[in-house]
Image 1 (cartoon, rainbow, N blue to C red):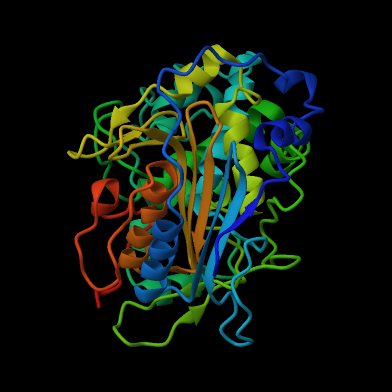
Image 2: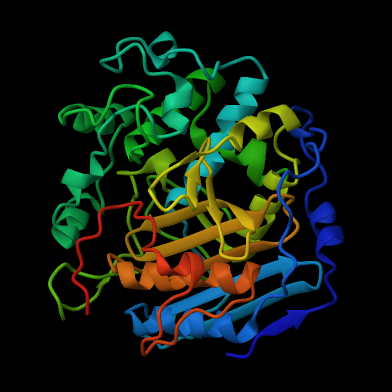
Length: 414
């Protein structure tokens, strides 16, 4: 469990090497100087360890974190990645990244915006006539979760395990999922309020395929995965397996003390462009660093992506275009996305200049306490402040708030 530091890797140089060979459409100049400072406090090794221990104490079989920064690469893992074999959690393992997929989808769509194929403030109906019931809903409304379209997953997973088993091997079309949303009342008028909804990014997938003329898998591959040499990142929908070394995911039933469900293999067709990608921690570090460092989008487009509005009353959580911002207790802001898919919680964040990154994963879900505990790695990594012990001191700073829920959380507390 000891924290490892690989000082042979000077991160800035390594990232430059990893990210060479971008296609002409994506080889943009770096953005203007960061408006917010990078973290200056050194990561707190014991705080990271405590955050991971808190996560397993809250019900995750295993958890891990990988940091990059000026001093190199730091990794730590606790618990197991396979309950049957007892194999320890491996920081190199692949896993399902859930809604971190939304940031990949946003990058692809914004590249298309920059190429003139899509307009951010153009109604979705212009590109997909008749799909949505309101021609005031724009592309920007989708990316900012301000469309008012209901999240179909609230009904789909109202009963967590039965809902999952009903869709585990099912293959949906995009329109099937949109139709499920349209059966529900809309949550707000277009543009009126932030309301997280997976429906928005299902429609984003449809826009990508309409504008690009290819399946989303092809666009992810040629615009992000190949240019950044993300060897452990894939979009395999509707295949169910995770190839190569990977962590198993375990879903908590709603009923207290019921056995965990191994949810590793599934189509994730219920999410698709909203949450079906597979990756590992190293690739997520590279992706968020490349994005914030200006290697995937031109400066003006990245600046648009980073225009944030609050998502709750805490005034520490914000959402831009397919991207979250968290303001930590030390004054540092970090940018990225959370991910929830059955059996996995993920955090993938970086400082504004991409110079320090964090990727953290716990192999469970429907266990909000574990998700919140895993979020304690952010304070430890970017502020150097310890989270609570597993036995009860209050969580400090950002870690005191419940985690963002990308899917309905029905599990009972301990």
